[in-house]
Image (tube, rainbow, N blue to C red; front, top):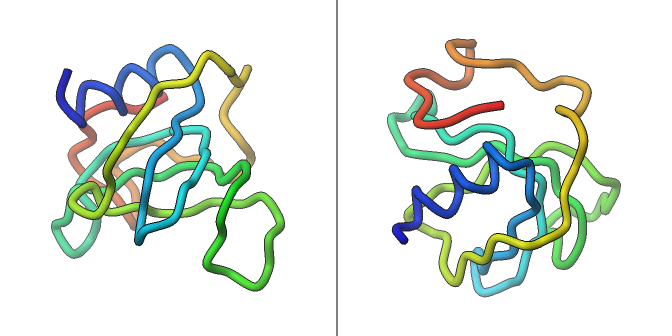
Length: 101
């Protein structure tokens, strides 16, 4: 299964993902895999737990560049709905979705 396939499985089945990003483990609720404004393939996800680069560790939206992600696992933990602030593509930040809620 490719990286895109794993992410899209997480999106379509509303299952959390665990992956390594910038040498740190992240757990997220994936909402959207699409091309961002800089034409990079990116995951838009709700950060759930593990490492956060931000001093503010409140759960919130994060963007992860696909090229910088590794060790992606689709977890059994699920989520029931899109988080507040989710916007389907196209929107001002993303275009051409590969998969989305």
